[in-house]
Length: 467
Image 1 (cartoon, helix red, strand yellow):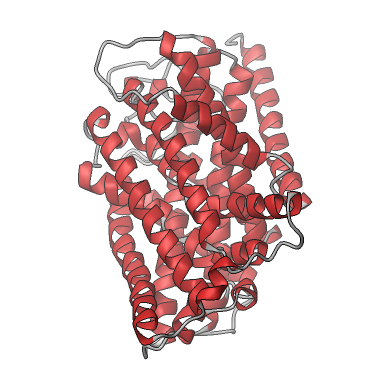
Image 2 (image 1 turned 30 degrees about the vertical axis):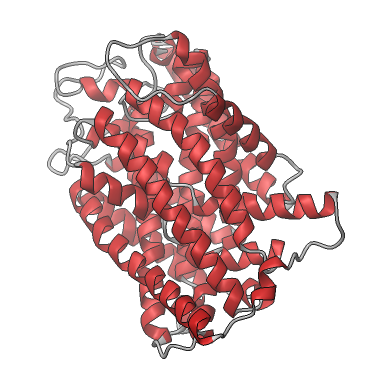
């Protein structure tokens, strides 16, 4: 298979498409991806991808695991995100190709099966994230306007609408992302303004900030905090999506370091502040029971802000998360197809729009299946679990690939960062992080689907004599 070639990994073929055949033998007439994303767009892309569903929808579920000390899991999650972000920045600078973690895994370990599983897990994490966003869209925020349509049907229609937008083109999708990012930042600014007003007015209960829901002390408390941190980490995922847009980004070696670090720093600061405000104004039990927890903060605040307007802002925010994740997953399909890890048809693009049409249809169908069978907390935790496993591999890969120098300058992370990144990712992915069994089952089913596709594709290539 093409992916077993040390000089080419998942997504490598896509850069050759405009000049002839890529490493997977792509036809010369197949158009490549368009470099439509500049530095400012990429920063907004990263911020917009990280912000959204995690903070707007799962804050309450995190509170249910940890209690009023809601800020603590977000602080820990921020640290873990920075550690792994440093590894991604180094790797995307060395290898500015689409497919991200799969590319790095292949270059480091040269095990095609492992490469495929990592790529498929990343793709599925994007789909479970988009599905959690779809569920959030159909929940309490939408209920401010209507109860007429069943939530599951709303979630399915939501996914299909985003697939249609994605087919229009990356420029249209990213520009939509910019608008939605500004809207969701406005929503969080409103939450912070409400919190500031409450503090100045003497409202809120500061004693909640040190409340822990987990019963007992010692191990029980630790697992409770780890479980809350693992779920809160869902709010930080997104920076890894951006590396899958490397072939659609202008000058990626220079653009990505600033974009990723700025994106994680801005969102991490906002998350901690929002968590503090939420705990100050609303009891964690109330937050836990809502699929629109920030709406509860608006209603509890002393400012007379219209709940319906905030609900509309929240709907835009979760839409943004879902849009970007479906974009990422479809581009990953494109990269895998170009390396013949998935059927070559997955790499087909619309001639005029130059968007990966078959990949978009495929990932949208999987997302429909997820929203039909899962709820916000389970889907969000599935996203975190899958990515924590991937992040552990990426942090190890960056150390292995120090033996593979390249002929251009790039960011190099201090060695301690990927070491700590791998350890923290493995701990949060382990059973020590109090996590529902359904998360492991759902992740296992998704990986099993990937293994099935791998086996079928390998058999087809063998029959054709192309393996």
